[in-house]
Amino acid sequence: MPCNQVRGSRVVVIGGTSGSGLATAQALVEAGAQVLVTGRTQSKIDAAAEQLGTAATVLRSDASVVADVDTLAARIAAEYGRVDGVFVNAGIPLSRPLAEMDEATFDEIVAVNVKGPYFTVAKLAPLLNSGSAIVLTTSVANRLATPGLSAYAATKAALRAMVRTAARELLPHGIRVNAISPGPIDSGALERWMPATDTAAVRTGMTQENPMRRFGTTAEIAAAVLFLLFDATYTTGAELTVDGGAAHL
Image 1 (spheres, rainbow, N blue to C red):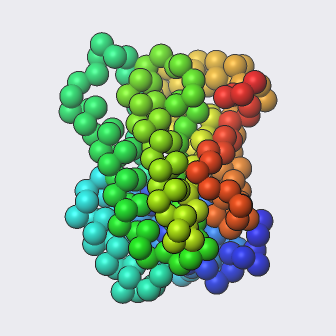
Image 2: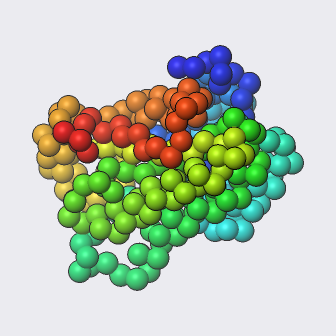
């Protein structure tokens, strides 16, 4: 872990009160960064604040609401001035067949998974120092044809496309933009978006299909995010898969 580069830096983690976002915030704090973390659920916000300690500020902000993003940007400008990195991890995992999708659910997943990250990058980019980086979470779902994930995969493919263009637009400002594309991760997401009666069978199937025959850990995601934020200084517009080889083998 690049502690020397991380120490003393200021990093914003959007969607950092659970799972891989929280693990990344924890890794940043342990490496000496000052971290601002956002979430939508108060109980998770309180738990994350207790876990991360005084090196982190954890607050409620809904990335899918542009007014919340504006408020967040104003607070960052007032309290931090400028920052050295942003990890945009907010997202909704959802499994639903095409025939069962309704408009309200579709609009919600697009708002959280596409609109939120888009305006977060747009509003926070002016606050980043030259030489800093933005990392967004996509998914191997945008590479694989998985039944039930059409809406989710579409949002992540949109985010992947946005990363390329944002990387080109922000490069003159010295800002790198990359994506991390997780495969099956032990983050609790599977249990959140799937009925408990189906979880065990799906987990077994996903494990057997994965080339490494296991789920990844949130610590492995955090390590990849820190690499893209601080070490990958000659990399922009890229998507790093952390998926046990699922997308390539």
